[in-house]
Image (cartoon, rainbow, N blue to C red; front, top):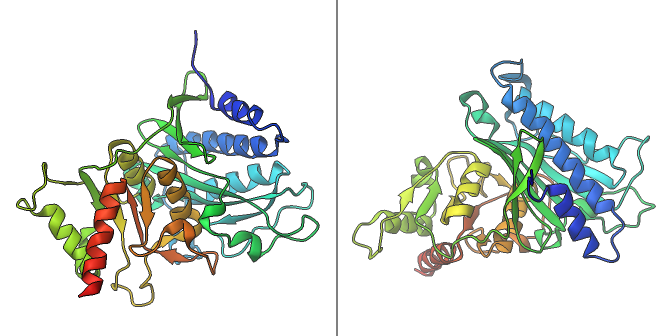
Amino acid sequence: MDIGITIFNHILLNQKLNPGASGAFTRLLMAIVVAAKLVQRDVAKAGLADVLGRAGNINVQGEEVQKLDEIANQVLKRLLSSTGEVCTLISEEEADLIEIPRQYNRGNYLVHFDPLDGSSNIDANVSIGTIFSIYRRVTPPEMDAGLKDALQPGLRQVAAGYIIYGSSCMLVYSTGSGVHGFTMDPSVGEFILSHPNIQVPKKGKIYSANEANYCYWDQGTRDYIDWLKDPHAGHVKPYTSRYIGSLVADFHRNLLYGGIFLYPADMRDPLKPKGKLRLMCEANPMSFIIEQAGGLATTGGERILEIQPTELHQRVPLIIGSAEDVQIYQDFVAKANAR
C-alpha cells in the first residue's frame, strides 16, 4: 500500500536539493519529529496515565507548570541535545540558556521552543501544541554559545514549525521554501504529507481574540474589532469570532481557512504592557510560517520578524494572519494614532 510521502523522505529530498548540505540540519529536524511522536503518545494517554494536572512548581513566566509541560520539555531537551548538532537550547519553561551535556558534540544550530503551548487547556482536552524555531549560531564554534547567538531577529531563522495535538496529530514546518503539513498515520507511526505548499487565503472571515481584554486595548484595536462586528460596515459577509485560547490551535485554523489572530498589548497588568506572547518561541516561528504562506505578522506598528530581541523571554503584541486582514488592522491603528 502506498502511504504517500513521509516527512523523513520530504526532509531528505530537501537535503539533496542543497549540494552543500552535511546532513546536520536533517538530523536536527528528525529529532524534532521523534520528539513529536513521544509527546503525542503521552498526550493521548492524558486521563489514563499520571500526566494530567499541575507539577507543583512555577516556570520563568510565573505560570504554574503542568506535568505534561515538564514531560515535553525533557523530551525535547534530551533528543535535541543528543543529535550533536546544537550549541545551546532555549525553552519557554527555563530562565537561561540550556547547556548541552558534555558527553554530546556541539554543533552550529540553536533551537528556541515552547514545549507545550496552551498547556492550561490540557485538563479540558483542548488542542495543544509544540512550537520550535531554529537558528544558526553567529559566534565562532570554539566559543560557548551566548546571548549573541540566542537573540537574533526572526528574519535569521533557518526553519520553524509546530506540532498540534488534536483530533489528529499534525506537524507543520518551513525551511524558507514554503509551508508543508504532515499528519500522523497511527497505523504506521509516520507523519505523511497531507498539506503541501500551504497558502493562507489573502482575506478571511474569522477573527480570534480574547475580547475580555477589550477595554484594556488601544483605541485602534478597539476600532478594528468594532468594525469587524458592525453589520453596516460593508462586509460582504460578517466576520465570525473563533477563539480557543491555544495559540497553536487558533493559528492552525486561521492558516488553513484564513483570518486574523490578535493578541495586542493591553493594560490589564501594568507590569506587562507590551503584550503576552513570547517573541522568540511563539511570535517569531509563527510569523516565519505565516509569511512563507503569504500572510503577515505585526505588533501593530512593526514587522515581527524585524524586531531585534533584547532578552530571552521578551514579550510582544502579535497580530497575525491573512495579509489583507492584517493590513486593514494596521490601517485602523495608524488612523487612531494620527488623531
